[in-house]
Length: 245
Image (tube, rainbow, N blue to C red):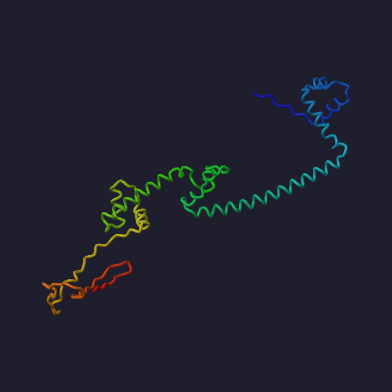
């Protein structure tokens, strides 16, 4: 059990110091007679002498104290305003950060910033530090899924997101249907609909039929025979008709 420390009053300390200053007894004798260490008494003497001017000019000491107190109060008020302003700014920033998804907030991390550790950066941005170490792994998995989606599209272009999703699950990929649809949209992939082709070469019975004029004809020079044809080409904007001579 630790020994309780003795507390001496200012009156007691001053009395012993004045006794030392009388030089009627040595410092060691006075300390021994009052059950204190000479070192303590020496320290009290030093403090007493360092502040002796206060006893000589008490009004000046009070004035200096009041000035110091006023300066401290002004400093405290200024710091309070600064802290209040910073608190408002911090709350505003936190609200704005909440509107960002985790991937955008990760972009704000500065790993090489020595003045603000990663742990504190993550706390300020509302991020779990462990998520930072899964970034590369997540990106790799994403690219693998996109690559497989592209392979499926090349093999079976008529498949929509649902069937592609089923193919991925059967291939061992753990991914949601919404994610598959999102990746396909990012990659610009759309299912190619299987449309039955219309045969445009079937003649109409009511139309007059002409014999093939070029059969067995010997074509030996330019402009001897002219031929024409018309066809159509399907584009994203619609049908384009092409006539060639």
